[in-house]
Length: 387
Image (cartoon, rainbow, N blue to C red; front, side, top):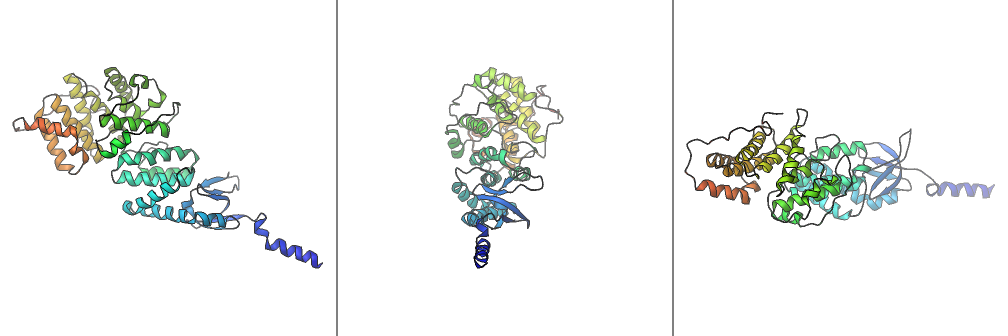
């Protein structure tokens, strides 16, 4: 009997090591059963017909049971990520970004919801402060991680990043158009390759290539791709790819890319996407040699200016490009008017220091001051009042 009692006592003492379930106390106050803890996240046990799934460590406050030790090894990561997210939610990007930077380096090579949380937060901080070129790498990393994310985490991160499409990955204020800068040149100098796979959405690798080529184009570097071949490549068969190809130095490539972009315009297309398309069409058309094409390009760009809800950064891009187009059609009064508007409304915007605006300033400085600014004639490609 004494031996039996001793055995039972031993089993009781060592029960946690032989199958006791672990549970996690989440930040929202709920307690859930878990089967693993790692830098990738916590794995919630399957229960009541719900399959097992992994959540970000940011959601975890404490762990009880055999997995408590593993959580202790990752407690600092979980706490720092939760603090970073809390600061970002209060629009304190200055306090959040250093934490995200540290976590980004700390989790290099990790895949899963925790890494996605970090990538989304870091990209959001950089987008919010206008450091768009440096936002590409974490945004692309986030896209690579999205397949493994729970729907609620995915939705929250889309909102955090400024992605309005419920199932999309495009950040509304981040089209593949750049203003020359050191950061953009660094982006353009990277060596990247697309996935070469046809999918509903471009992969992270596809977008890394597209945005890097755009950075090369806008800083005067060689594109390093076969632009004619790109028209047939699935990597480029998307909104951003067509926008980049619309500014090709090959007229046939530009024309085909514009036709594809025009087909994307419709009454049911959200405003952010219409702005992207009009921006690309306008910048593409002013590259043509004909005055009518250039005027049509200016009209597409001024269409953006006529929408009060257009994002300020994209509005500045549109006005700057339109001013350049007006110089090309010899409407220097109109160019001066747009330049004055830009300098008054967007003081400090990087576009004001761009080579394109410098050329506009030189052109208008040589013309006599106007009495009234002129407006370019209308053009049917595409109709500016089409919603």
